[in-house]
Length: 404
Image (cartoon, rainbow, N blue to C red; front, side):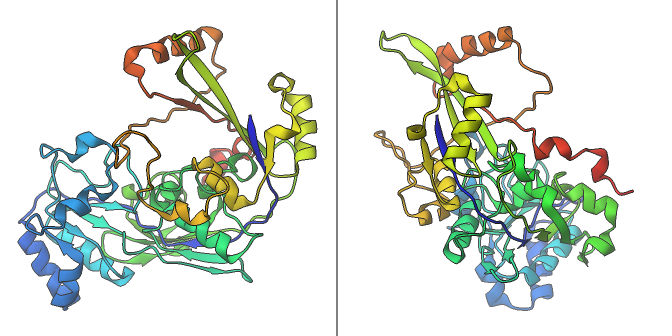
């Protein structure tokens, strides 16, 4: 088991994040939408820079930019009438109003991958609002706050923090190509969840554009809606334009500082037969000596020794969980389409993933059933990742999240 060990403090984050919203399905065509947009923005040059129709040569490349499931690339899938890539947040209310006026749905994507294609597919006339141009990140170290625009990915956020301070961090996801919009509004988790819960649990304010084009904050939207958008998916309620997250300080407080995840998948044994291998990975918020004592007491079966552990900075732990060597430049995690390490002629990695929650311990017979499925030929490169919650996640009650 490889274990990363670190200590650091965290920070307030203002996150500019936009989600998708939908309206009636009737449409008068994208020409009417574009005419409406030109009236609201009153700048034809500006519109030509941010609007793509099927006749535009860049339309398909932009549509496919964040697709990670190959079946969604086929021509049989419904495609948007228009793709809009706003340069400024001030352009977004016009997109909302014009989509509403012309009975078109909005699918908003924040720059990361989308397993089910919900941010760029619809069965009714629709517009894709792509936030790829809104990825600026600014951090105030003294105040411990940061503004992160909606088009940024987690890797860009982590890298920016690492270049600003060696003592600040933020508890988001492990995969660097995930967009901040989906992770925060959808309740995504990361390696520090046992200590601090989800990023959504640390949100103290938000700004949202509703169907009328109004910009609301926590006070004006009300506590019910503010509760709903923190994990319920911003797509259900409007376009979230900013999140404000509270500051955290990280210090050893066992055992919440320890996360142990298990990666399970098929491999070929020395005899040529397929077998199942379980790999343990861990993150500990503290020093190696303390970690060894803890593991000897709680998990002696793993037989972890000091040489199995590596002390790293927080940004190096982000590299580790992102699948990179901790010796690489942190800048590598800022790429939306990272280079694939393979001997095969692959230029892009396509995949399918699914999440589920286990409420009770899995019996031995359940694991035996999993092993049987993973050994089948169809399993191929299949992998199962087991991530324990507990810690802070067990302290945050569902009822406690509702307004009193």
